[in-house]
Image 1 (tube, rainbow, N blue to C red):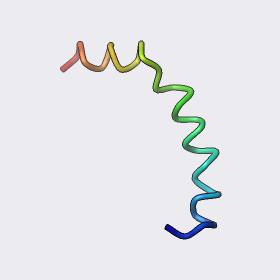
Image 2 (image 1 turned 180 degrees about the horizontal axis):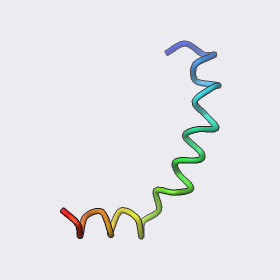
Image 3 (image 1 turned 90 degrees about the vertical axis):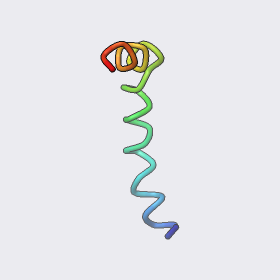
Length: 32
C-alpha cells in the first residue's frame, strides 16, 4: 500500500477502533 495513503488512514483507523469495542461487536452479533 502507498505509505501516504496509510498515513491518511491511520487517524481514521484509530477512530474506528474507538467505536468498535467488544460491547459493540457483541451487540452486532446479537442483531444477526
